[in-house]
Length: 312
Image 1 (cartoon, rainbow, N blue to C red):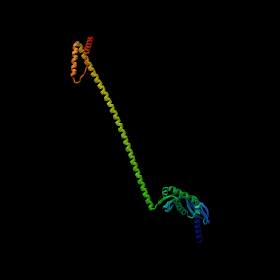
Image 2: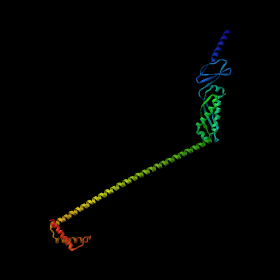
Image 3: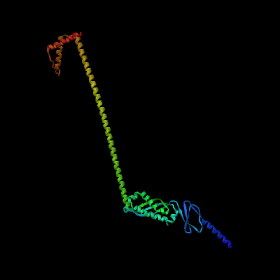
Image 4: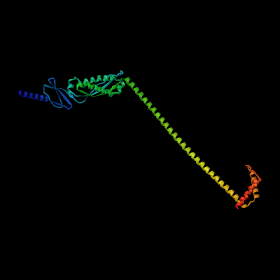
């Protein structure tokens, strides 16, 4: 009976020792193994063997990127504005030995270091620059934290300012400033629109005046051409009328000449007709004064008679 109990306890003890000897480590994790209180080795992912009673796993370390969300911290800017800022730190353990033996509480140390560094950086900047230069603040924080945590076996990958909470009076002042800026931009846009409309209207008026002037010019040209054409036609008509009158007079003279030629009028008859014609002319409204010399008149009549004789 006693032997049975002894063997049962022995078997259970062996099983327990076997289980405690085998350590399975997950991917992206490592274990820190100590032997009799002194660092012995770092167990990688997979199956690891430790000596029971002598060896002890003191810590499991996650090698993936981890996040520390810091609560809002009061900070003061260079121009003495107090505000609350909360940050998020992304870090990764690169040396598990340093992360275990160089710092007692790694997460708390990084959180406190982030707070003090944030206050130092913001203290050198004014409010406007703090609000407009988040990327610069994030980059400065990352560089300072990465250098400070390097001795702890940690690499700081990113630091982000999650939120900036301003005092109520500062928020109200900023809202008034933003409202004033919006109203200013609205006035500028309205003025630009009015200016553009005036320019467009002026250009349209200019173009209309140019077109009007061109139309008046074209009208004047056409009117001048029409007047010139009318004057030409009038002159041609007058010339044609003069020509016809001249032709009629020539025809009339020819008829008179033929009549005189055919009538065989002597010199006495011509003198009488000439005197009668002068008498008729004297009765009209238009007076014509003709120098009269009896000898010249008779000589003319004689010349006419000779001319008629020659024609026969």
